[in-house]
Amino acid sequence: MKKKEIEPCIIILFGATGDLTNRKLLPALYELESENLLHKESKIVAFARRPKNDNLFKNDVFNSIKKFSKFKKIDESIWSRLKNKIHYNMSEFYNLNDYKKLKSLIKKLCSKSSEKCNKLFYLAVPPEHFETIINNIKKSGLAAGNSSFNRIVFEKPFGHDLKSAKKLNKTIKKAFKENQIYRIDHYLGKELVQNLLVLRFANSIFDPIWNKKYIDNVQITVAEDLGVETRGNYYDKAGALRDILQNHMMQLLALTAMEPPVSLDADDIREEKVKVLRSIHPFSIKDVKDIAVRGQYSSGTINSKKIKAYKNEENVNKNSRTETFVALKLKIDNWRWANVPFYMRTGKRLNKRVAKITLVFKQNPCILFYKHSKETAPNMLIIRIQPEEGISLQFSAKVPGRKMIIDSVRMDFCHECKFGPNTPKAYERLIHSAIAGDQTLFTRWDEVEHSWEIVDKIAEAWKKSKKIPQYKPGTWGPKESDELIKKDGRKWAKPLTPMYSALLDKSGK
Image: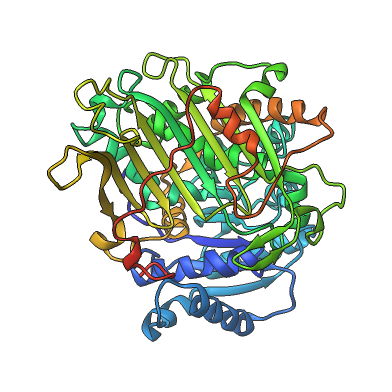
């Protein structure tokens, strides 16, 4: 993770009036400006079709920052600096002349030809527009120039399957090289995900036990208590398998299981992540029934509120067999992790919103204390990615009193308690890294490729099944998920509640 000097650049936001830009990107740019991490000569150009001018768009930007920024109050001096960087370019994705108009604007803004200006193209658009935008960037000559940098940022999903991902990648490579391509997985920008490397490789108490000798199994959970909300049209085509497991969860798996990189350079870290994905124990389509479970939420109630079934959500097919829940067991064929199962689960309308990695340690025979201990949970190390960011170590201790009674307790590191609430958000960090040319937090093509190879087999197996298990909202998924892990003599971990969580209000403060 090299620290690179920030150069001036033109940030072109495709889809500048969309929801992602509104909720995430514009607040992130304000936050970068507040930390003086945008060069004073940088410019932000909005590329969108809605009939607006500079002033109207700047007003929209102000409202977005006011509503979604982590700061309670907008600083007028910061806003004044950012406002002067913003320009609106009313354009259509499919009109080549609009890209030529953009090229002229860039020349005007940086006082030299487009080829000599640093440019960051950010595609905050649905994936069906990717190829059109890339082709027009190439045809218009916007990606040309050797004396400047040209980088392009893609939001997920990167393809719908391996075939479409390869086709998209081939199109991109006609205009950009791999070192110019930034495939975003916003989970990699989260503070506790990045802390994984420090936790593992900077602490002598953890590194020696991070292997098959001490760890019984690893569990990765990414759960949401919400439904599909307004994303029914997209989600019904993607499902939990493609929407979360293919990208976020495979990245968490790779970071948890990877070997120490040679250095903190982007290529060295990404090389070790790819090795993990290549080492996943191969399975056939016939094997999927033994290692993967899917489910779909039915109607029910949560906190006395009626919840409609997934099939009745807006823009969802009434006969949909799209999964809203996935549980999966994978094994990694290398020295460190031989015979250690990695259990992964993700879903919507589950018991609560949480993202965590749990390392479950092997249990001692307990010959000394078997008469004195009630059934206690095994020792666990829990990395909480959201919402209560932190790290916990759960272990056994004696209950106070004259009798020898053993129970589970935990030691907690609360990220916000230690460092405060104003640590950089994921998009703030990711945009800054892209401007700086640091690809550490972005996925390389071969990572995407290996992830799709795994997901495609599972999706193909599920095509042949006409039924999909149902689960009630507010639960942890279908009973088949519990059976998947139970048949191995294990169960989904239920760590103790963090000791400080009762002190936090709903906003996490």
